[in-house]
Length: 308
Image 1 (cartoon, rainbow, N blue to C red):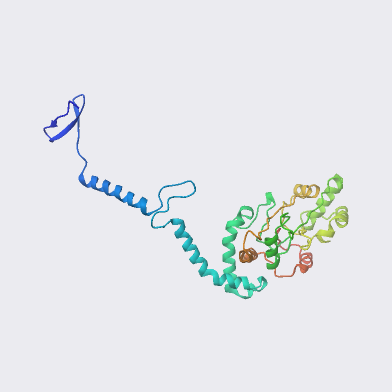
Image 2 (cartoon, rainbow, N blue to C red; image 1 turned 60 degrees about the horizontal axis):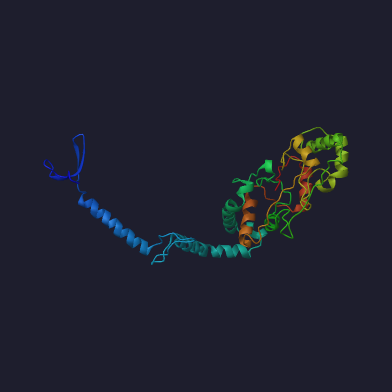
C-alpha cells in the first residue's frame, strides 16, 4: 500500500487505510499468543496421528495408539460383566420359584430385571409399570393377572409373548365379538351384570342369565377369571380397557386383543428370569397356584387385581 508509514507516537507501521483522518495501525500480535497458537497447531497434528480423528464412511481413522472412547467403554463393560458373571451363573442355576428363598440372589435378580425393564418394557408398560389403559397395556403393580402372576407364569409370558405369531408356544385367547349376537337390550343387560360384579351397578337377572350362558365358561360364574384360558377377572375395580358402561359395551361388541412380543431369542434366559423377578416384585406377583385364583377371587370380590 502506497500510504503506509510509521506512526510517530507509537512507532508502529500503519496498514495504509484511512477513514476521515483515522488510520489503522498494523500492531503485531503478542508473542505469547503466537507461541500458543503455534503450539495448538503442533498439538493438533500430533493428535490426528495418535487418536481417531478423520471421519470416514462407517468409522474414523484409528490412530496409531489404537485408542477410542468406544473401545474404552467396551473394556469397562466387559470388566463389569465379568464381575457379575458369578451372580448371573447362580441365577441361571437356580429354579425361578426358588429365587425368593435366597434373598440376596433374589435382590440381585430384581436389580438386573429393573435395568432390563427400563430398556425393553417401559415403552408399553410405563416407567412405573402402571400400563396405559387407553392402549390396553396392562398394569403390573397389582394382584390381577390374566395369565397368572407366579414367577413361573410371568417367565413363560416373557419367553413366549401374548398372541405373538412368531412364537409357537405363545399364549393365545380371543374373546368372541357379540355384535349381531346380542340385541341392544341384551348388550345393555350383560353390561349391567358385568358392572354389578364389581359393585358398579345393581344386579341384573336378565344379564346374569346371558352371562351364565355365554361368558361364564371363560370368566367363571362369579367373574373371577381363568388364568388357564387367559380370561380376566371381572369382579373387581381393575380394568384393562376401562370400566365404564361404554367401555364394557365396546369390549362385548368388538373385543380388542393386545399383543406382547416373545422375548426368547431377543433376550438371554438369565435376563428374562431377572425381568420376571422384577415384575413379580412390583407388588402384584402371586404366591398362590393359578388353580386357586378363581376360588380366592370369588370369596373376596373386592380384592385388587392386575390385568397383566
